Length: 188
Image 1 (cartoon, one colour):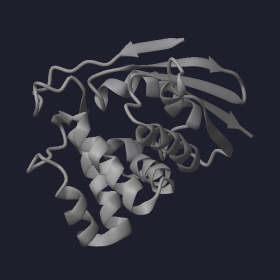
Image 2 (image 1 turned 30 degrees about the vertical axis):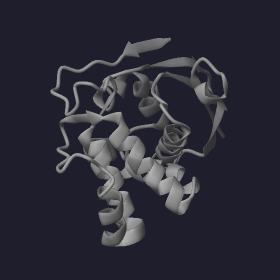
Image 3 (image 1 turned 90 degrees about the vertical axis):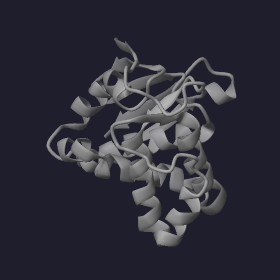
Image 4 (image 1 turned 180 degrees about the vertical axis):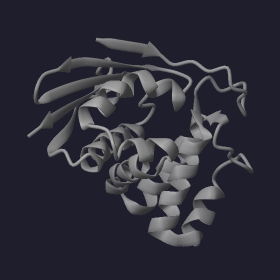
């Protein structure tokens, strides 16, 4: 079992907020919005964010990220949260390059320990890894049901990017009285 509690010493935009996400995650979502709905979509979504500039390496209030995801869901449906998660895995800086040359198992086994690169809160655990099944628990990361769908999409994107056949199920959820969000990846 691998466990990591995320932390960061990077300056944050809003010291009153206790949860933060890295700027390049927000910016990658803005790229997805532009791809799907053009500059008008970006302008509309961007208008909801309080920060005038989002810098990739800085951390920002999780509410900025949640606002973007809420805009996507409210205007275009939940299916785009998973689709956007798949887009992120293919278009997120160095990660998008690495995923092309790594095995799915290697990527997923590293995910719980890489959380601190994206969030300054929460933890992830790789609970089980059999030949065909991997179980991941995320604690305090999925702050809204939208974030749950994004993480399911990220895992689906990792399957596709590594040409691995399989499926990702979100089998337990903190938003449905669970203690964590559980994702079960079953490979063919």
